[in-house]
Length: 234
Picture 1 (cartoon, rainbow, N blue to C red):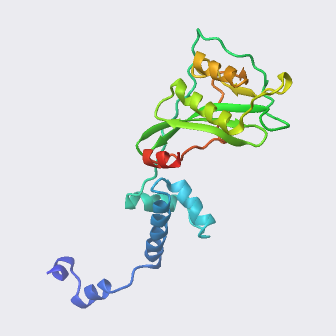
Picture 2 (cartoon, rainbow, N blue to C red):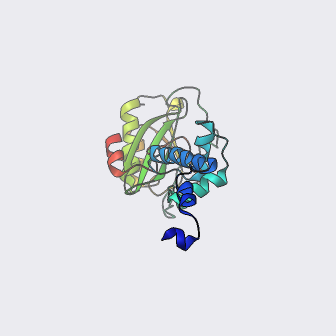
């Protein structure tokens, strides 16, 4: 019936049916398998640009980005795209703030001379979480951190408390007291945060409003993580 409708002979139809796929089609099928593996290994977060980069750098395949994007689109494979982020700095106009003791000179000649602290926002598979971190400028190590689903003052106080317990910058002379530098966020201008600084003998310092001090240096959790992953990391 099909042969009569199509106007072809039975031998021609079965010859076409048993013919192997064209080399280009075979290449696309193999390429799609690589794409699916890379996408699965990334926990389904990679879009076509990053999949394309993996194909070229890891597999050594000289494949075109448009071809990768087309195959992913046809197969219904899509990466995780981040929405634009809002800043984590919200200033309290009525709060007092510390003077700028750093003047953008983010260097130190010994441990516990200068700490930077900041809050970063991280989207996860189950909603946003916020990471407050304290970094020792001398070693570039995160010496204190805290993660929660809100940006209340307890988030930064807990991170500072961890840094104090781990580094114990106490009994310092007046000329070598640890400077703790932050932005003008309301968490850092709160009375409770200032009290924690003074109790530990630390010097507070504040820089420009809205400048992220630890962006690119503090990565508490990846965007593809879940709240359970974050809890386990803690």
